[in-house]
Amino acid sequence: MTKNLYIHTIGCQMNVYDAEQMAGGLMPLGYQLVSSPEMADLILVNTCAIREKAEQKVFSFLGRLAKLKKKKPGLIIGVGGCVAQQEGKKILERVPYIDVVFGTHAVGRLPKIIQQIESDRGRIIDIEMSDEIQEREFAMTSQHEGKVTSFVTIIQGCDNYCTYCVVPYVRGREMSRSPENIIQEIRQLVKAGVREVTLLGQNVNSYGKKEGLCSFSELLSQVNDIEGLLRIRFTTSHPKDLSEELIHAFRRLDKLCKHIHLPVQSGSNRVLKRMNRKYTRELYLEKVEKLRDVCPDIAITSDMIVGFPGETRADFEDTLNLIRTVEYDSLFAFKYSDRPNASAARFSDKLSEQEKKERLQILLDLQKHFTIKKNEDLVGKTEEILVDGLSKRQTSSESRQISLNPESDIQWAGRTSANKIVNFIQGNDCRSNDKILTGQLIRVRIDKALSHSLWGEPVKLEPLGSEGEKSYAA
Ligand code: 5AD
Ligand code: SF4
Image (cartoon, rainbow, N blue to C red; front, side):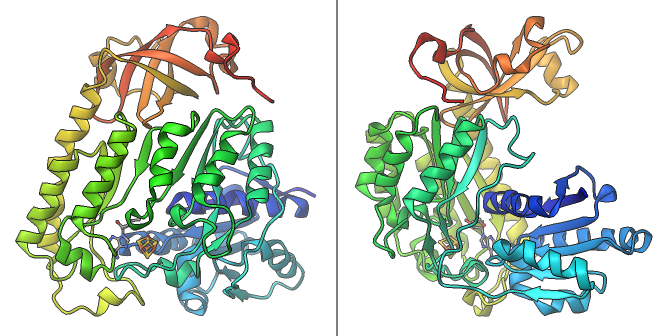
């Protein structure tokens, strides 16, 4: 009998990957994915605890499920991910209609847990953490169908204990998967049509160190050799662990995309020390310089925290100056918030919400200028893009800006190696079969820069693969 499964994912790419694993694991029990919670027999909420706001989102979503449970008492509701790990039993106490709470290390045990609930209708909590990696059988689900890009977790957990961060407490110790399992999974994805993988970890740079496996750069080389795979990305890199070898991989490996997400968090040495980041502003800038020496057109992005406890106006100015020096392609910036267990929660000199809000706005306004500048620098250049598929409808103001006829023009979207979204228009012949371009690398001349995307025109429509440069395995 088929049963309907709805997964609501909040948070980072790792949660997206975990959601795929949950769906794959539940398939043998007869569960198929559906697109709305109303249709579901089982709802899983995959949660995020990284910042206060993310955690609030979890409880507001759970609140919305009360009505559904009333209407359909047989509905099973599960809460997984980082908030489940952090709060455990408290979730069952706070939300009476939740049936299961399962932690970040319990994803592999989920099918057994659900089976048990189906048979005895009890409530289960499983937040046990292990110090060994739990390999799960890879299973293709409808989430993989027609997908050009995919995430693959290579290392779980974190041993760094940045003072603001909850991750080491909710994801546990660092544990790397074996290169064999990773390569095997990517091969399966490529067979199913995936052309680009993003290797995931809280700190991919320390891949394999603890277990004495190969280094992260060596793993990248192995992934680079996979036939049919066109592109490789990875995230996230801790600046302190960014090795020379890895920097040189950007020149050495033809499939490695020219983009690095290298979170700096602050431009002030005093704050970096209090954050326990284990690098200085100078060391960070040195690494940025080396990256640009090796790969001049590499895109660099970062995360920033504003209003860390004790951050003075001068510290904040240091951060703004660092942004001016690096000229990031884009930034994710957050107001500091206390997290349970993270030691900065106990620091005394907290900033007011108003001050944090103002600093965030100043930082975002400054960065906006660089994001647009970086996009404008690409106008007139020819870029290779991997086509994701038909693009989302443009807003009417954007359509006017690029003289688009929304009735007849077909819009496609792809990404450059530097991870910039490029939209382009292609004729009616492609409408009937979006597979013509989806998953292909094509060359596009960039005509226009908008604030979050680019517009271009294909230089040559034949996919680069058909010139015999690359063979597609699928
Ligand atoms: N407050 C604000 N931002 C945080 N981040 C992590 N913890 C906190 C916190 N307590 C941000 C960091 C990290 C990103 C994923 O979230 O910038 O890189
Ligand atoms: Fe959190 Fe620091 Fe680990 Fe990143 S490196 S997950 S910020 S503790």
